[in-house]
Image (cartoon, rainbow, N blue to C red):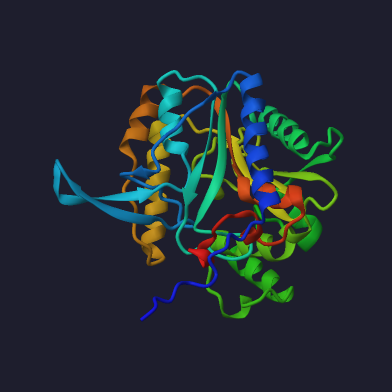
Length: 329
């Protein structure tokens, strides 16, 4: 009897888009090489993952020499923790192009396996890093005049929803979501950050960056557990996101360097995970030891390469820029 093979074996991305991805990778490497930023590689598997309640891990189990009982390993959602260990060891400015992984995320803008560009700049603050990110995107787009603006998270909420995201309580945020008829809002029971994220994603985000690059700055401190707080307003963190054509492309911040404060934030996030019925995650003690040794003052940013390619090419579905998305495995 003849064997039946899967019929849809073809890649999602046509050849010209695969060529565009290869070209983008070459341009990225040339950009950082010209600026003296070293390319590094770090493990895709780690003994810890991170405690952010908004991100769930994919994991596997290793059994072999030294681990007869087995050891749980997590596919990394970002190379951040390993790269910070390199920074603490004196690497200087570094970047990485690699794969990253998140559980439970699939759709026209999400794939559980995705490509990420991440880099760290000792001595840079957030504005300087935004300048460099803009230079990179303009070069990739072939448009040195691509417009760029910067708006605060608070200003966007006040302008679009007439609500202060730094002061409004859970009840006010929930009422705002329901007044604007956000899908499912009537049946949701969210914490404060949950409502803020719903309002941002459902009402504000789709219109961002339609006329060029838009940086959103000054995120609530509760939404930036790895970032330094803004000394001018401790309610906010020195964190930014880049939007273009309604797509969130990048997340960056001035890095928290205090190991004790970082440990406390990890514990708070694990408590929040537990209260929400999520599995608390093992804390990365190696990262904390590296920070205690001395993490240089720096800023770092992670860019979603697949989404960046979507924006550059005007594509609306991530499947069109991936060789093989989840649906084609």
